[in-house]
Amino acid sequence: MSSRTLPLLFINLGGEMLYILDQRLRAQNIPADKAKKVMNDIITTMFNKKFLEELFKPQELYSKKALRTVFDRLAHASIMRLNQASMDKLYDLMTMAFKYQVLLCPRPKDILLVSFNHMDAIKDFVKDTPSIFGQVDETYQQLIEMYTPLSSGDFQLIRQTLLIFFQDMHIRVSIFLKDKVQNSNGRFVLPTSGPVPYGTLVPGLIRMFSCTGEETTRLQFANGGNYAAALREGSFEMFGDRVTKLGTNMYSVSRPVETHMSGTSKNSAQHTKVNAAPNPLAKEELNLLAKLMGGLEVQKPGGNADSGFRVNLFATDEEEEEALISRPDELSYGVIKIQATKDQQANAELAKIMGEFTESGDPSPGASSKGDDLLAMMDGL
Image (cartoon, rainbow, N blue to C red; front, side, top):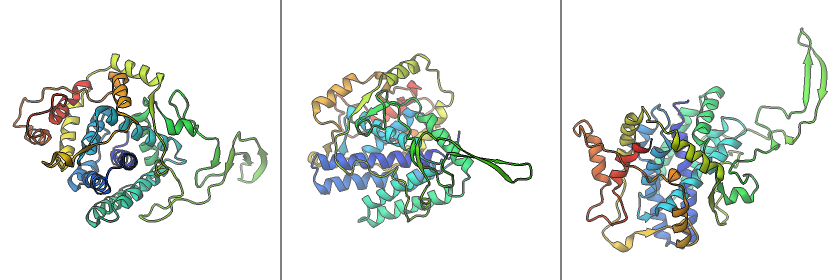
C-alpha cells in the first residue's frame, strides 16, 4: 500500500464532486450568484492550507466511511444542502467516475495527468476569484513537486492502492451504461483498441535475438484489437496539453445521470457486513480524521432563512425519497454512533471540532448532529 495515495484520491474525487454540483446547480436554475458562492466556498474549503498540510503527510488511506464523512462535510461547506439520498448518489457518481479513470489509465503515471485535468478544471471554476485561484495554484505546485519525481514503480503502487480501495464498488451509472463502457453488473469494459501507452510499441511483433544480441527472427501475430501508437506524452507541467481526456468534465454536455445498485454490489455489501471485524486502527483513523476536519473552516449558513437552498441529484423529490428507502443499509454511510466522551482532556481538539459541528438553536427532528456523526463513525468499522 502506498502512503502517498490520499492526496490524489481526495483531489480527484473532489474534482468529480465539483463537476456534478456545477451541473446540478445549472440544471436546477439556481441563481448565478448563489451557484458561484457554493462553488467558491467548497473550493476554498477543499484547498484550505491547514487541511492540505495534514492531507499531504505520508499516511494510509482512510476507510470508505471516513472518507465519505470528509466529503459530506465538504459538500455542505456553503449555503447548499443535500438530502441523504442525494449525498449518497453524489458520492456514488464521484467514486465510480474516478474508478473508471484509474482503470483506463494507459500507464500508472497517467493518474497524475488525470489529477491535473481535475486541477485545470478547478482553476477554471475560480478564475475570476484571485484569492481562491492562488490557493489552488499553490496546491498544484505541491502536487508537481511531490509526484513528478516518483518512479514508475511508485505510481504502480499508488494505482494498486486505489484499485484495492475501489474493488468492491460496482454502482451502475447511466452515462457509462449508455456509452457501453460499463456492463449491467457494474463492472467496467476495458477497451481493446486505441493508442497504446506512451513509450510502448503496438503489439503484434515477436523478435528473437541470438546470444550475441543480433536479431535473428521476426514473427507477426494477430493482437486481437485495433491499436495505434501513442501520439505524444501528456504534459506534467502546470500548463500544457494533458493528451488524455480522462479526468475532464463528462457533464459539460447536459444529460441525465442515474445510479443503480448492481446485484454484485448488494451481495458484496451483505458479505462485508457478515464478516466485519473491529478495525485495530480505528482510534488512529479517528484522531487523524479529527485533525483533518479541524483544518476545514466551514462556513455556516447565515441567519437569513432564504439564503440557503437544497440541491436534488434526482429528477424529482419522489425519486429521491424512493432511492433513500431502497438503498441497502450496508451501503448508506449515515450509520455512525460511537461513545467518544471519555478522556476529553486528551481529546480536546476533537471536542472543539465537535462543538463546531453543532448547529446553534434547536435541532430539527430529522437531523442528527454532525459532531455526533463524526464521533460515531467508527462503530461500523
